[in-house]
Every structure is written in C-alpha cells, then in structure tokens.
Image (cartoon, rainbow, N blue to C red; front, side):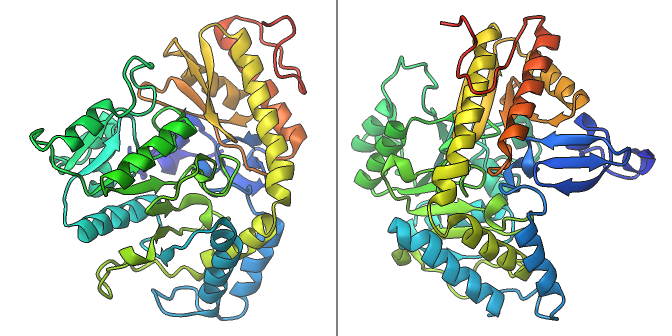
Length: 433
C-alpha cells in the first residue's frame, strides 16, 4: 500500500488520515474496505455526513440515472427539475408534517456556509451586531463561524481578532451550581448593565466537536423562551445533530419550540454530496437578490440524492419508529454497559449521537487507535479529545452495530486493563448496580 504522495504532496493540515493510515477503496453501508482488502466498520460516517451509510443503493441508482440524462449538474441558483423536486419533497415530507413554515435558502454547500448566512441574516434583520454562542461550541472554520466557536486551537487559526461575539455557559457548564441563564436574564432586564442586546443566540442541541454534550430539552426550551421574551433571534445549528441523528429529523423537535433560523448541511444530501440549507421564518426573508450567494449552491446531484433519501426514510414514521429507534436503544445500551465497567467513564449524547467520556484524558485517543487496529472507525472530540464519539449510520444493521460495540469494549479492556464484557441485548453489565 503506497501512501507516499499523501505525506510528500498533501498539506500538513490533514488530520483523519493520520489516525487511520490506510487507503480506502470501497465503501458500502456501514463498512469501508482498504487496498489490502481489510474491512472497517464505520462509526464515523463522514463526520455525520453519511447518515444513511455509504452508497445506499436507491440513492446511488438515482444519482447514476441522473448522470446519464445530460440534465444540469451545476446550476447556481437557476431553476431545474431536480431543484423543484427537492423543494417540493422537503416541504411535503419534512416541513408541513411538523408544522414548520420556513423559507429555504441555498447558501454555499457546507456547514460553515449555512452558519455564515444565518449570522449575516440575523444582523441584517435586527440591525444589531453582537451574537451570543456557547462554551465548547463549534460552528465552522470560516471567520464568522469561528467567531461563535469555542475551541481555542481552531480560533487561533484565524490569525486575526474574532469580534462581535461573546460566549455564555452551555447546559451544565457549572455542574448545576448556577441557575440556568441567571446572568443573561439579569443583564438583559437591566438597562444599566452595559450589555447590548444581541442580534441572535446560536446553539447546538448536541455539541459534537465540543465533547458530545447534549443539552437537556427543558434547558433548550428555556433558552427559546428567553429569546422570545427579549426579541432575540434563536439559531439552531443542526448541521451534525439534524437529519435524524438524535432520533427525530430536527434535533429540536422534542424540546417543543420552533427556532427562528435553522442551519442544515452534512446529511441533508443523503449521499455525501456537498449541500447546505438555511431555513428561516418567512418574515425574516429580507435578502436582496444576490446579496448572499455561492458558486456551488446549485448541486443538482445533491438535490437528487436528497430527494431520494427523504422519500426513502422520512415519507412516513416507519423508519424513525422502527430501525432508528431500535438502533438508538442498542447503541445507548451498549455504551451504558461499557461505561458501567470502565472506571471514570460516562455516557454522553442523545439518540444515535453517542459519546464515552473518560476522566483520564489519555484514554479516548488510545481506545480510538485500538478500535482502528481491530477494524472500527471512531473519532474523538472534546477540548482535550477526552470523548470517544459515535456517529454510526442511522440504518446500520443491528448485528454490525453490536459487533462495533464489542470492538469498543475490547479496546477499552486493552487500554485500561479493566475487563469489559459487552453483552448484546443487555443495558447493563451483569452484576452492575
């Protein structure tokens, strides 16, 4: 296996290839295969961009068929049948059944692009400049998105001051010792506080890069109520937690509120094709034509893939209440078993967005490396890479999900020396309290 060109020609900025030093040549479902024929279960799924796995056959066929017709592939924001089909399907399958009245904007095709559009729109609508975001947040790598991101290493890469944004504590940041939103509520009510009202607050319902921190539903609802009371726009960044990852299509559905603006990307195309959406209430649609644009916002292959994925998985609730619900139970139960046996380990996340946090900051990275050695792709997250992060495809076959959890248990045993015997079908280890 020749990897020379990757180390001699490609930039030092590469990251995932360092932890997974092999060349992948085939990908199907929840499995990738390298040049030596070795198979790896994929609990990374393109950092959440492949919620339906690699090369889902129906989506693959739809894209392949489209490519043979000479229909437009690149179309900026021009009208095409593929774009029409997507908009109609997204309206009929996703928005209307959930009672959501959103306009759909196509920014540039990445997560950071939709965040940039959301921030720009919030400032334009309100006439205010400041944005509030949360400790340990991650919203993207362009300057606006970096300004609302918490990770110091990523922020430092900007090379200039990141202004017009402040960080406030995420749920449980003080371990329950301080009342939620106490400071923010007080300064917003006090005309003498010297704190200007922000244009918007942006939040991830589950912080992926920040350590798989899942906010409580009641905390999210309280945040929405606070924003409504003070006429502050609420932006939900659902780039990673959306498209079914938490168990419902949007991650905020169970919390009982409707954001003013929603950012989607990653798995909205359903096939790893670059695509992003910015959704917002119709009265916020104050854009001038062309005021925000992007050359690749008209990716018709992504439209075709997205339309097929939505019809296949979300036309009714059978997938959500069937395979997805079962897989969530399997993943959560398995992680509880492992955490119950490994000293200092706790389970994080929501839905099929899972995390194992280790008190010893060295453990998660070593477990991830051992998982790779045993044929499983998982990444780490958190300020010190102290969390093992799980993003398996939503439709991973149950036996593969259980096999992957078995590999994690074996890897934790190897790294920590504590015996972890994962038993499929059990929520706790035998003899555990």
